[in-house]
Image 1 (cartoon, rainbow, N blue to C red):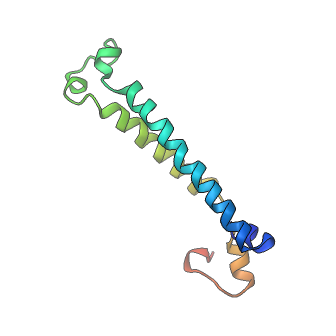
Image 2: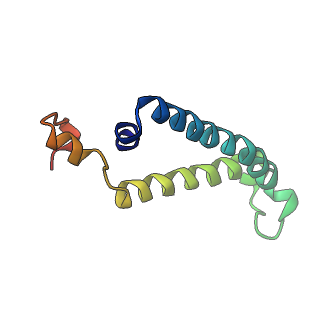
Length: 102
C-alpha cells in the first residue's frame, strides 16, 4: 500500500486502503455462516463417513477444523510465496526495520 500512496498521494492511498479493507472484512462475514452450516453435525449428514461417537459428542468440531485448515494453509502460502514489497523502499531511504533485513 505504501508505494501506491507515495505515487498517488496519501489521500488516494487511504481511500484505497479503506476500500480494500471493506472487501476483506465483508467477504469472510458472508462465507463463514455457510461453512459452519454446511459442516455442522457431520454424523447426521454423512453417517457412513463420520460414524465415530466423537462426532456425536462434538458436532461443531468439523466446521472449526475446516476453518483452521483454511487459515493455516493461507498462512503457509503467504509465508512462503508473498514477498515483502516495502523492504527495498525502506532500505533505499536508510530506514531499515529489523524484520526487513536479510
